[in-house]
Image (cartoon, rainbow, N blue to C red; front, side):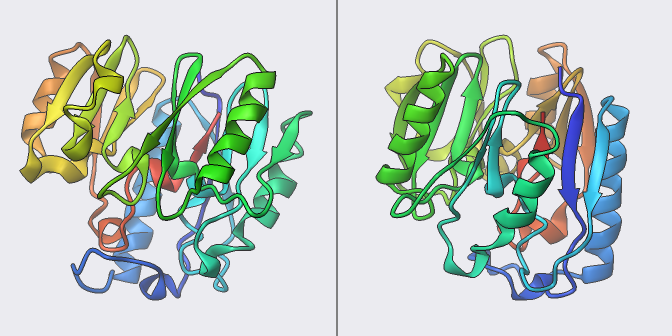
Length: 253
C-alpha cells in the first residue's frame, strides 16, 4: 500500500519544456487546475501528498517521477538523461533523505529517468531509451540486486519512456500498448492490450484501491473496470502536450 506522494507545482515556464507531441502549447492555468485535480485524486486513494513549490528554472520539473526510483526499502536518485533537466533531482534528494535511511544514486556516465523503470512485484523492468542508457540501467540493476530485487532490461524502439506504453496494475495484469504488445518478455502476464487510438491512456497508475486513468478512453476504461478495479478518470490534456502522463506527475511510496 502506498502512503505518500511527492508532487511539484507546474512551472510558469512549462510551455518551454521538452516535447515531441506537436499538440500545441499547454494552457498554464488549465494545467494548474488539472494538477490540483490530480492531487485530490491521490488523496482520495489514501495518500499524504507533499507538494513542492514550483521551480521555474526547470520547465519539466512537474514530472517528478523521473528524478528517482522509490520503494519500501530505498530511494535511488536518478541522473536525468536530458541536459535541460539536470539539477531537478537535487531538491528531491533532500526530501527523500527525510523518508529513507537508504538513499543511493545513479552516477555518470550512467543516465536514468524514473519513467523508464517499472516495478512488477519483486522484479523490475528497466527501459533502455534516449534518456536511460545501458550504463545507468546496469547501475540500477546492481543497486536493486543488493535489496533482493531482480531486473530485466528492455530496449525501447519508439516510446520516450518504458511506462509510456507498459504499466503494471497488480494481480499479474499488465497494460500494454504499441511495441510491447508482442514482446515475449511479458508473455507470462495477463495482457490488457491498448488499441493504437487509445495508446496515450496506457500510462495509467494503480494507487492502492484505484486505477487513475486519462479521461476519454472508454475502451481501456471498460477493460480495466472489467477486472474489478475502481477507476478514477482525470483530464490531463495539458500534460499530454508536453509528453507527460499520469505516472510522471508523482513519486508514490
